[in-house]
Length: 297
Image 1 (cartoon, helix red, strand yellow):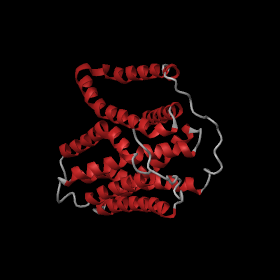
Image 2: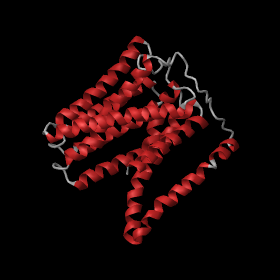
Image 3: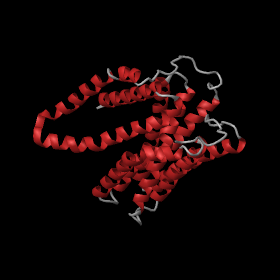
Image 4: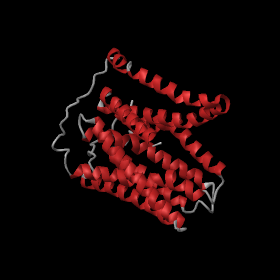
């Protein structure tokens, strides 16, 4: 199992590294949003297809991941040729980091990532355990299916719309959405229907900040996309693990509301950090101040 997880992480980092090398800086968020759609589509469809194969083919079930792995490996050999034929040029791969970027702003940016993921993890890692004694397994399954569906069908549109405002305002909006979702989880046991609002808020918040954070990480570690993704993935994983451990301990002690409050507070702190950057007109959290909103065609 650990080998599979390690392979998945390496594959994800490699995919994103390819994306940021073969597309211009201004296109990173848009193309990374496509990667998020593909990842969620695969995660949503794979269990269904796998269950059919397992029921009908028995031990031949193991052939499915082997076949897909071979196809994925073969397809990567076509990427450089397709990129050249499309007129795309590999970006700057310089191994040096701009001195102006190697500053406490990088630490602040990673801290904002960590705080946002603390809130995000409340639904994906803490909620399933919290829900096991309060809601039916069918309801939980439907909620996660809805989450995947929202990403698959609206990620590209959400990314396009969000780019009409500055990056820092996107940080504020996304964190407030995720934080509000965490707060609503506290009262979800009294009103189950509110869980669908929670899903919409948290998923849309993640769709806004996910590609933004990834694109900004690549910009900070100029020319070192693999390093950027590795460091960011480590920070995200640390945040999710921290939230999961603390959350499960809180649920075990019948104090689940404390975990959800932690997620809310973390997102509010991240939003406040972005707001202070706007107010002072300084990139305090490692994200530049934009003079005007980018134009989206």
